[in-house]
Structures are given as structure tokens and as C-alpha cells.
Image 1: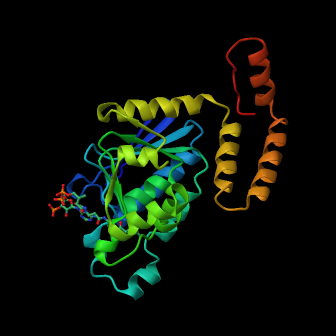
Image 2: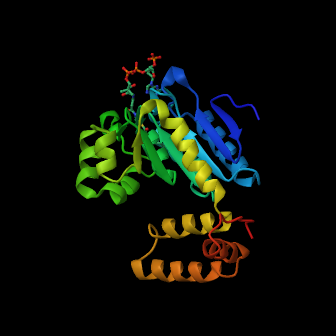
Amino acid sequence: MAYETIIVENEDDVALIRLNRPEALNALNSTLITELADALSEADNNDKVRCIVITGSEKAFAAGADIKEMAEKSFVDVYNEDLFGAQVQVIERIRKPIIAAVSGYALGGGCELAMICDFIIAAENAKFGQPEVNLGVVAGIGGTQRLTRIIGKSKAMDMHLTGRFMDAAEAERSGLVSRIVPTAKLIPEAMAAARKIAEKSQITVRTIKEAVNRSYETTLSEGIRFERRAFHSLFGTEDQKEGMAAFLEKREPQFRDR
Ligand code: HXC
């Protein structure tokens, strides 16, 4: 499918989605967020895709929501259209794993989009920030909630209140990103991580995503109860038999997603 603001390439089992508005540092406008939600839904429904990578350009993952598009809107406009609300709900509900491969700026909605993904691999030149305060607004697609849960109150307040940027090293120290790679190797490293995930049993992968995400939504005891049920349920799969047999027979498992 041809999109205007993103480029989708399916390589083996992995869908690589590039945000592509270079003239605006990949700022998220309504077209881009709608196309991204569509492409992600399509990847989620495509049996050939087993993992998804979202990336931007070397200079910017995304420099936030498109300020030109938003500037003149009134409260009634953004309230009635629920700016980005429907598309973000689609993105949050994707069941396949999504890796954010971040090079350059991930600011405002760009940082929030990266945090909606399942984990973030950062290039050495990555810069994260929630500079909405400088525009007289607040994060709007989860930034005050997700950043706080990920890096804690003090750092989240610092980022949101001052609008300062965090470099890749601080982001890794803070737990915002899972790893840092050389900028030129970002895509190969993210694709290698995605291919590794694609080799696993998709039932197991899906269950892991569901269980880890549950930790954001519920109490510790309920989350652990959910995990135990999930653990037990996987003993009903052929892939559990195969995975454990392969270990005991000292061979690679052949998962069949059953
Ligand atoms: C629209 C943007 C943009 C944005 C950059 N551009 N960010 N356009 N919306 N968020 C455009 C610039 O206007 C410029 O176009 C071109 O991209 C290059 O940007 P420069 O500013 O010239 O580049 P540079 O000097 O290198 O500075 C890079 C930057 C800066 C530090 C990233 O562009 C910047 O501060 N951008 C805004 C970041 C921000 O405030 N994001 C939060 C948005 S609010 P022209 O045509 O002028 O050359 C948000 C809320 C989310 O995200 C809530 C969702 C519901």
C-alpha cells in the first residue's frame, strides 16, 4: 500500500515502518498518525509479519506533533476531534511486538510514540524530550503517565517542567531505552533484534507482551496472578513441548505457533 508520510518495507518476517516527513523532522500530523495506525493494523493482521520496527530518519525519529497543524485549533476543535485519540488507541492495541529504533530527536509526541512501542533501541545521537511546556501545553498521548512510570517522578517532572532534552546515555541510565547502538548501525541492530523475536513462538511472544503490559495496569498481586495463569496456559501449547524437548535433545526448537 502506498502511503504519503510513511514507508513500509517487509523484510522476511519483520515490518519496518519509517516515518517520512523529512521537511518537518517527521512531525506527527493527522495524515502520518492515521497512516501509521493503518500500517500497524495491517502488519498485525498479516500472518507473514512477526515483529514490527518503527523508525525515523537519522536526524529525527519524530520532533513531536505537528505544531503548524495544531497552532490555530481551539479547545472545542481538539476536544471534539479528540486529536490523535482514535489512532493512538489503535497503536496501543497492536498485539505483535513493536520496537522503536530512535535516531536523533524523539520529542513531545515523538517521545510518547516511542514509549507506546514495546521497547526502544537508541542510536548514540538520540535525544528525548517533552518540550510541550514551551508551547503552553502538556503531553497529550501518554507522556506524563508513561515517562513517569518508566523513569520515575523526579526525572519525569524535570523533563516535563523544564522541557530539557535527555541524551542517549541518560536515557539508558534512566531505563527509557533498552540499549544504545552506534548511529550507523541502528537499523541493522533493530532488525536483528526483531528477527530474533520473530524466531520465537508467536503465542509465547504475544503472552509476554500481554503480561508485561499488564504490570502497568494492575496491582502487583493481580499481575502475578495473571502471569501464573499465562505460564500455566502455555503448557497447553505444542510449542512448549517443542521448546523443552529441543533443550533436552540439545537442538534448536522448531516452533509452529501452536
Ligand atoms: C512542525 C516542525 C516540528 C514540529 C520541527 N519542525 N519540529 N514542524 N511541528 N513539531 C520543522 C521546522 O519548523 C522546520 O521547518 C524543520 O522542521 C526543521 O526544523 P528546525 O527547527 O529548523 O531544525 P533544528 O534547528 O535542527 O531544530 C530541531 C528541533 C526543533 C530542536 C527538533 O525543530 C524543535 O524544537 N521542534 C519542535 C519540538 C517540539 O516542541 N515538539 C513538541 C510538539 S507538541 P521550516 O519549514 O520552518 O524550515 C507535541 C504534543 C503531542 O508533540 C500531543 C499529541 C496529541
